[in-house]
Each structure stands twice: as structure tokens, then as C-alpha cells.
Length: 338
Image 1 (cartoon, rainbow, N blue to C red):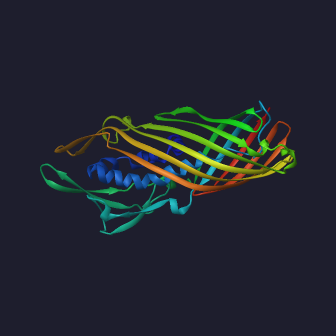
Image 2 (image 1 turned 135 degrees about the vertical axis):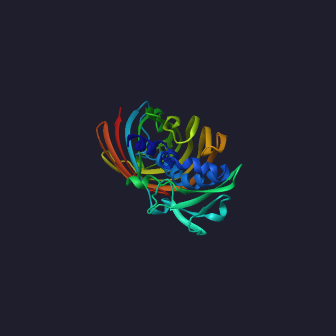
Image 3 (image 1 turned 90 degrees about the horizontal axis):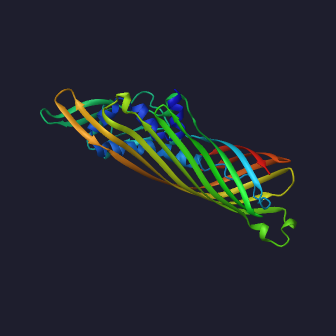
């Protein structure tokens, strides 16, 4: 299951492809519009969760570093998946060629973060050029909940440099990794400014207040041409997320133990493309070639609040914080300052 766990970090849209398996043929047979409509609702919670997850851990203190100071951090983050994100309401009237097998008007079905228990079956109607309207049963794809996964993990190497006292330029990176047919990479840039460093007697203030602006970009791709799900060429899913974080941070300014808090706003855009050529068939009589079936764009935005603590012992520090947002999360950082 190494591929499945890699897909968790890349994007939950990739889970859709690995879970759907042979059902993709039937889903595309229902029509591109229906396939895209279902995929959009199915993938949205995963894209949202990933956007929140990759924006955690940008700060561990409100006080700016000394001029030419360098900070190297190893950050691990866990975002928690709430029950409300594990499913969505699928309304039969929203689809042209899909209905529930028991003729229900709507059902709560698994998103990419959930699990259908028991399986949910729908009926796909497609137009055969010889026999006219035909129907086939399809079991809807489940999500990562089928593997008992309730978190979205992420990890980064982050470096901060202070060209001026109170100003810190930050960069974070997750190296490009290829596992079988999955490729991922992440990078981000940030700027944190300690406003109290501008005060003429800033040492007299027990609280440091700073602002942070950060950009994070994630790329992921999954090539499944060789898996034989649907006949065709160059079949792959590509996803990318671009996000911005705006944060106001306050912290104490003691030598060893400090508390910090942040209030911020996140905005992100994710784009998922199902690419390649797909030969949708029904036996020997019906065949249709579909190229680059669809692209899904999702926009995510929301506020977040972070509280945490930082313990510093010489050049080494450890910080732990908790963020309350659409996806709550906990972050642990190991920091080395020079």
C-alpha cells in the first residue's frame, strides 16, 4: 500500500483514481458532465484539507531574529479529518445519466476522505449506437476511510534568514519524490516582520507582534496507463495547489519558554486534471474515444487561529502548536538557530 499512502500526501484526487479502478469506464460512459460533477464533489474535501495542511508550521515565535540570523527547522504536521468532510449529499436530479439503484432521490455517499459502508450502487445509462439506451450498475468509489486513515500528514524542511533585524525571509521545501508512478514536490516562500522591532525601546515591551505573508505550491501526478483500468494512452491525474497565508502573530519574549498565538486567513486554488486518451467500450459493439476528459478547479478560503509554545535551549528549540480551522491540526517543530 505504499502507493496509497503516497497519494494521501500528494492529493486526495489521486485516491479517486486508485479507488475507482474499473468503475472509471462506466463513469465516463455516463458522460463527461456527470463524471466531472461527481468527481468535483468527491474530491473537494480532500483538496480543501490538503490546502489547510500545507500551510501549517510557518511560524514558531513572534519575535524577529538578529540581523543575519539563520534558522533551520524540521516541521511535522497532522491535520484531523472531521466526520462532516467524509461524505457529501449526492442528489440524483443533478445528474443526467446516473440514478440510484433503489431510485432514491438522494443519498449521503463517501467523499475522497470517507468510506461507503455498505457499498453504494448507482445505475449508469449510456447511448449504444446499435441498441439505444443501455444500463449498467456501478459501485461508487470509496475514499481513504476504507484504509482507516483519519489524518492528513505533511512534513517540511524550512529555512529562515534575517537580512535585517526583525525581518525574516523563509523558504520551505519537500523534495521531489517518485514512488512507482506517483510524483510529488512542494515549495513555499514567506516573509515575517516583527513590527515591535521598529520601536525605539522595543526591549521594554514584553510582547512581540509580527505579520506573516506566505505562499505555498504543491505539485502531484499519478500515471496509471499501465494499470489496465481503461484502454488508452498517457492516462494520468495531475494536481496543483497554489495558496497564500496572511497571519498576525503575537508572542512573549522570554529567554527559554515562550507562548505564541496567531490569527490568519488562508486562500488557495487547486486544479486537478484527468488527462490522456480513454476508450470507453461495452463489449465489441460500442466504443468511444475520450481525450483529456475534464479539469476541476476548486477555491478554498477561511480563517484560522493558532496557539502554541516554544522552548529554547541555546541554539536548539522545540515548538508545539494547535491550529483551529476548517481542518484542525497539530504541528511539531525542531528548530536550530545560528
